[in-house]
Length: 383
Image (tube, rainbow, N blue to C red; front, side, top):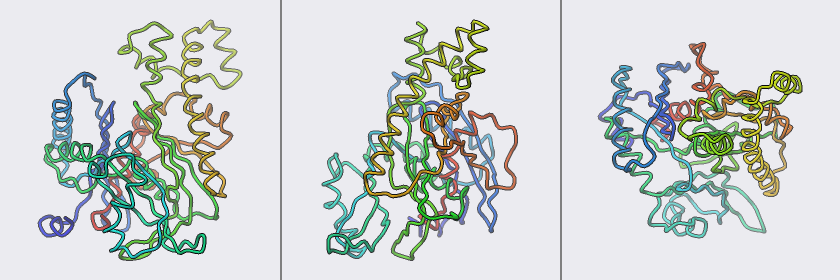
């Protein structure tokens, strides 16, 4: 595939396309030379009925992508997109040490014990995290194994190709954001440090924990990534969970609650709470109570993820939480999460490392672009 691309098309930038339930997000970086510059970014809301046929949904999404590319005058033909959810399984496993050629032949049979799907129904990929682990008197290797149902891969590939683009990569949401984090963080100044990433979407939330100074090896060379995911989970708590609860508690049609969610805020500070009470601001008090209740469900999942991370033998402290995703833009959400988790929380700026980063991007849009940015940061030569 790479030889084909390089033979018939010049080396070019990759358009990152994050296809969500609520919107399609686009980012295009220019990675020529030493510096990275931003060529294009966009946020395209999707107004597709939930009961629409899958084939018609794909056609609509492909059409929207094609129209966007033409409207923006995007010249590159290369595109990358990503997946997450029930059809994606990520496992961190250890196997007896063998060479890569033998591992390529055996990976399907080795993966069967860890994948809850028929192995013939999934596309498999893996990364060797550490090929020199000595455990229980035996040389072993640690790797991250990813299995994605082929029907999801086929769906994403069809959407991109129908839009007139060449799909060069189908990534995992959490790994795409990991890519952005590494560009933002650079080389860590201390060992034994980890970062949690929480990407809150409309239907689900991606939770990952990244640790530093892990050696990654592949068939060409040994690379040292500043931060690399050691835990990845998808939990089905997100913006739609908030929509449903507002609809239920406030007796509203669920299709009419989106604007309410956008204008709501979580009451965190005592002064804000007192002001709301003094002003008889029932709307703010009610929506704050409803949203914070849903967020506490998410925090329970976050705490379970942290407990599992620690129980797996990782003796590193979580130094910060990076927050992103369209539904992370609820006012005071970062403060609320800090109060609950006692870990510093900050939003990812996916353009922090580029010199021509734009100003005055709406928060909901900026917070939504991390996955697409991570996809565009990939390079064809590294695929």
